[in-house]
Length: 227
Image (cartoon, rainbow, N blue to C red; front, top):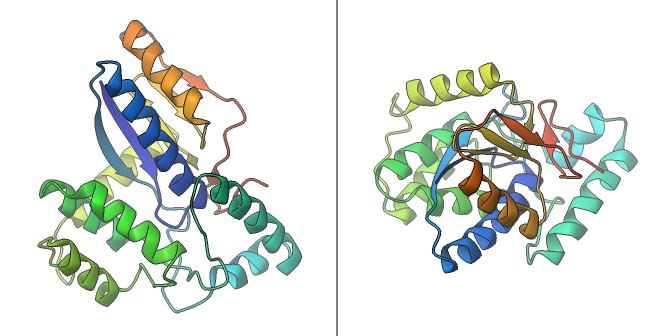
């Protein structure tokens, strides 16, 4: 089964969603199922500048003040902790993630896409690094053993095309899990829900697109994360 996951590396619900999906896939494979995962890019803030601005400051200006931003990130931090993730929003830096998506794609071509994805999540949410900085990204690529000329155009055209495809599909919030190009599950759904989706799609491949809109938490294309 092919599953495409649309996400952004500065999206906390995406980090949580990826972790939950990975656990669901592990359980599905234990039952004999086969899953091929492809990571698709999405930018919460395509016009963002990587200038060192803290995400908390950016969110406060965009979503109605520091109290609202603290509420938004406080809830997601609490949920993340239940999934074993520590999100440090006091040091997270707002970034344009286009080059980060280039790194994921280039790493994927070298068999290290998942490693790159999680390295970028940790860099943003744990280490307080600017994942929009080519210097930071080049260092991460070196640590991963990935060949990536981010100073040039490597992977840029492909990422632009995939971002356009996401818009054409109507993707407006992430994470979004697209099963076999037909069955879409939106938001950081619980692990059991994702496992059930894998099992259902295995039975129903070939039917019309269906979207599960249960209470899955997500970040939308304005960068607002559910509270």
